[in-house]
Amino acid sequence: MRGKIIKGIAGFYYVHDGKELVVQCRAKGVFRSRGLKPLVGDDVEFDLTDEKDLEGNITEILPRKNALVRPAAANVDQALVVFSITHPEPNLNLLDRFLVMMEAQEVPVVICFNKTDLTGGAGEETYRAAYEAAGYEVLFISARKGLGLEEVRSRMEGKTTVLAGPSGVGKSSLTNALFPQAAMETGSISKKIQRGKHTTRHTELFSLGENTYMMDTPGFSSMYIEDMEAGELKDYFPEFSRWEDGCKFLGCVHVGEKVCGVKDAVERGDIGRSRYENYRLMYQELKDKRRY
Figure 1 (tube, one colour):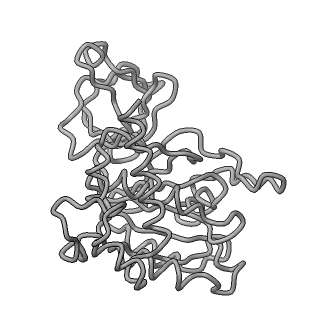
Figure 2: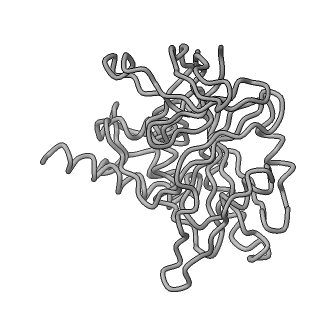
């Protein structure tokens, strides 16, 4: 039998057969010896060992289109990264780190700012300008009020989308709005620390329609850029390439050089200043990491 892993908890993998059955499976030990771990989103072959209790064993993991490291998921077409526009204010450094990770894994990203009902549109144009200049589509929604949800649905149609973002930004509320059957706990924001409770504790795949899947993932509060050299980082900021002809030196990293087209673009406002400053922070982190 064939199916798709929709959830993995404590060594059990829940496989949807593509129709109506969800089978609780164990993965055979051969995967461990091959250094292969099943991921949510994997297409698999499995044997049904107990028809009454719907239990079985995964016997084969079919070839993957891709496999993300963080969030851990397979066969993803795009990421929808959700941040709140207020309560809490968006952590743009965290957003830019996520975007770098998705660029490195060649996964297209749609950026979604939630809770617009609380701001009256304040700040939207600033965020739109910075991230559209980088080539990202930016949506502004209110999951609580149902604003902009049709736009979100249309971007997800026919694709497998990984839903990611920090805790407390309304990811679970958005999941409930898009897929009410999820009946997920939405949690509440701690007024004291302005941070959300981790209401999603594992990655789970939901079917929203024909060939349309959404993976909800646990919220993250930090993200470290690894497995790249400092000099490579600029390649994961797509808006930089347009202005690199103005750099004096080939291989300019856009930090200490005096004649730099990217730095000039920042001064003109053609590249978002927060994007550039976050690039500098990450660049220095990678340099320091190599030094030590």
